[in-house]
Image (tube, rainbow, N blue to C red; front, side):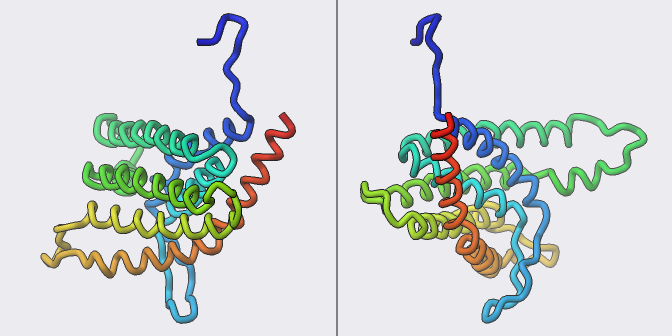
Length: 226
């Protein structure tokens, strides 16, 4: 334990990235209520994806950048600590939606609950898919380095793509396995996964490698400045 005159310090970049990571964990769930169009792509057709992917890809980027700058163990701790704001935000949303009555003059309770309310099953699916996919991302990213720290962009792309595929497989399976639509038909899980995976692979390829490079450079600059 540090003495009275001692202080615990951490690199400026790690502090900044950890704060941003915690905020994005919460924001990913909120953004996920909007389905975004990615437009029409040759050979792929029209692509659509839940908007939370933009925040989630930044989580992949931040975890990879922390692994590159401070090692796999530190990145894994960031991922595990991410469960705290994620669980707290889920609990608060559930409390506000179901336990706190709306003001008499406020007429948007139904829309608020419909957009931000998730059932216990989907919340559980989100927790599992987050933990597994982010841990996998850090593990693959670090493993491919082989102690040399080379091929940053390639490692970031491979780890990001794999984590996105696993995230989609886990979340959709846990959320909709055995669920039937209004006509009594089982949800077409394979078709749901296919569209999401293709869209996420496109975004991962475009966003993840350059952003990891940018955050690693930013982290090194922040620490030099400190």
